[in-house]
Length: 348
Image (cartoon, rainbow, N blue to C red; front, top):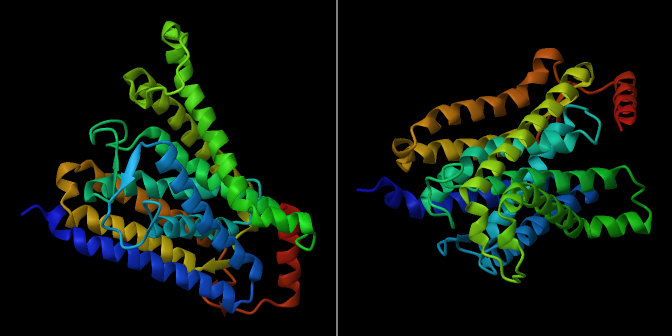
């Protein structure tokens, strides 16, 4: 029996339930803490996730979702928007523990997210969660490199907008308007970054085949993006982005290593870890590991990096408190609270 087919019904349900429970938990915590701004931020992340998926599926026509998902909005599963909100908000909670300058944190957020996607997408397409227009043996094991770059751009766009708004006075009407429009602003930023990535990928091919571009065509063939020459440039550009992303994050972590960590967020760690474990478990239960044995090694590497990002600060400075629904552990004295505020103010 094909294990992939045998496990499909349960995996769809588990996937959706895992997302729903995690989303309710993280939303409930912010409500419990009476943090209205953070509640609005995670709801904005949900709107942003649905907006980008609806826009991408209806404008790009490069992938489609399975009809087996329970709740769908314009052919996009609600669970996908929920997971975007969970991933974006959880990686932001992680980078907040490092006390890096706010302009650096979006890059760490993107790095944390792409580590997850490098094997999430590969396993998901083999489970039939979504289907791309390219065969499963092209680009990143059936995942277009522009989608991988898109993950980086998605997280950077939303994280940067939200973190910038946090530096402003929330009592001003313009700041509140920006917060309300944050999903749209982040989506516009995402489109600009994707357009730049596409332009740089197409440019060498266009210069070598300029004669094909002289005739105006209002309906260009989307398959040109999967031309072998363009695929090569997409790989080069994506790897360059990934290397630079890692360079920015590692350099910042070394520079500011003495200023973190003040707390450890158990809830965000639990949510991200459960996603990694879900992928690893389905990698084996679906039989995908037999088709792609290299992903046994990749899964071990990606999960190890995930754990390293969470626990590395503990080797340098133990957290004062652990944070799930409320602070657990040592209560900060007045001197420590003053130092925490001082560090945060200087890193902004």
